[in-house]
Image (cartoon, rainbow, N blue to C red):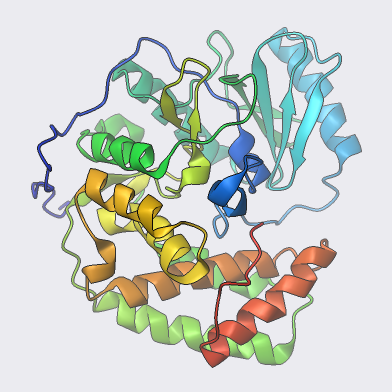
Length: 352
């Protein structure tokens, strides 16, 4: 039986669907770049740090480029002049021939989450919810050269991120939706994002591995004792300002839908609180605008420290998966582990 999801949020005089509906929203996947390129506090943001698992070898710009050509030809698109925006957990290309973004997943096992992301995008479109849109008329996700490929409509002429108050409004709106059973959304299990990637880590010190395993075991027990207060239901799964962009028509939209799941809504607030409270990536005014518009102050919830520790652990383990391929990650990972081990400041953590 699904946990009760009837509890409402404080409205501050705003209706639960206090967003202006639009007929059409599309997406550019700038959040795949992980560090938004706009000035101010947003440029220190990590868009999804902790949820990406690098498991596939031989994923290079050359191999991804070949897959792009094959995928575009299969979809009836022209890959000529396409620009590579990012090569990380996904190879992200912007086509020159059409307003289309192509995402090629590094992990060959990502068919299930990307199938879910496409389904979520199509459902949100029927709800007129401001979110990413898949390119119509193309059967997707497609498996090309053993890689999972998706095609998304391009929402922006230049990168721009939404404000935190707009992210809060998007999440309030999202959390009032009732997802169809046909989406078959999974129950969110944070420790599935801890134990499995932790076992796969290569190139890290034995002492760091032992420490992370001990911490994961302790946090798992503490997490199981948490008393959540927000309702259970649909979550984005990686909600942060890096996954809320501004459409060229001025509207804020949500992107990066492959983490949609069922969980307590505290999970969709934790990154914003963590970025403000521990990392200093948001100003106090920005964070207070988020709290006011969503209607809940996560920092006042007794379970916040444990939830923050779990999310921080997920982020650090993800970073550890990059140390054999990235000199920047190899330098950052032990710094993060040391800060967690000693209770040191996180203010010098670098986003990825």
